[in-house]
Length: 179
Image 1 (cartoon, rainbow, N blue to C red):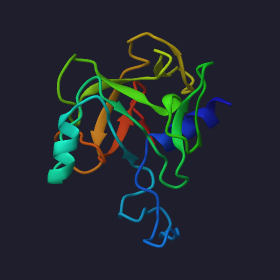
Image 2 (image 1 turned 60 degrees about the vertical axis):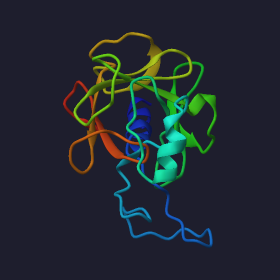
Image 3 (image 1 turned 45 degrees about the vertical axis):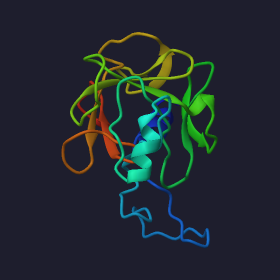
């Protein structure tokens, strides 16, 4: 139901690298990923459509994400990615990295670098935005840019720009963090 969808989104919006050793096994302490990030943190895993990403990756200094960049969200404890289905249902049950998992990060203030504390919208491949309604249910059935769609992005540790690989939280209009 609604709580399960919120829990799936909460988990998906609290992402980090999955536990894995060099041999491909998975063993992590409870609540912690292999990189020491709490499982309820979010990893903005990638972005596309910007040529400076390749150069910054070579320099080991990731460039900040900008409004309009596309990202994938992965739940660290399961390795599953946030998915928006055709009917607007949102879940984190699949590990695919395709169109249904690609989310456009949009700054409410318009173009520019996405920073901790910014209000953002998360737009799915359908053109609809993630929505947290009065009942705290999460879906992507509407294209609105209202308070139910607006989320505050917060870095897990400190302030500054959001970069690929950043662990972040989202705070909904309810004042609650989606985790």
